[in-house]
Length: 245
Image (cartoon, rainbow, N blue to C red):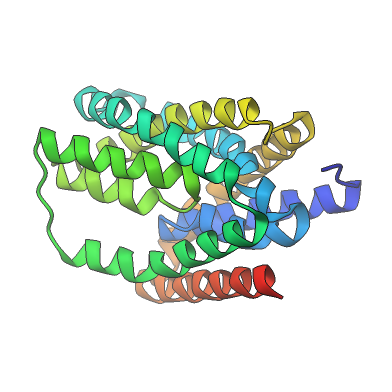
């Protein structure tokens, strides 16, 4: 996957734009990038590239909120999630491009009603529930992108709030996505050029997150969420069309 300078610049702009949208809405960066990047780099490369990018994206957030990490929740989710992450990456490695595009497209489409259902239900989780949820999140993360809504819901259900959610979510995501990148390399799904592409996306997202944080105080939250959900549904539908066309 050797990208010419023009395509690489387009990828960087996509990272910047997705970070702006994600920072203002609090979700959707990975989902939007998945749908937008697929025609440029191919469906098989999307999740490995974004595994690298999201490590960089979350490092800045972790640094800002580092004092608020909940170590208990981090340990439970990481311990239960890693074995299932390995399984998820293996499943990803054996699926063909059409099957992957279908899976990713369906996950993207399902994320909108899933987010609404999970937000409406006040889920309360103990240690066992958080561990089970961590396994589900690990498996989903290995196969697809845009699964962050599952992790946020788990942390909220475990009683975390505010900066503790943001910090713990960032640290878990860094740990799992770093592991995922190593696994993709082991399965020959992440080479040096794909790694570089992920780095470009991650670095381009940094100013986008800052712009999004500035915009969030100047935009009606409800209208923005509806706008993001429309983008996500369009992206999921486009991925399904692209996979079967």
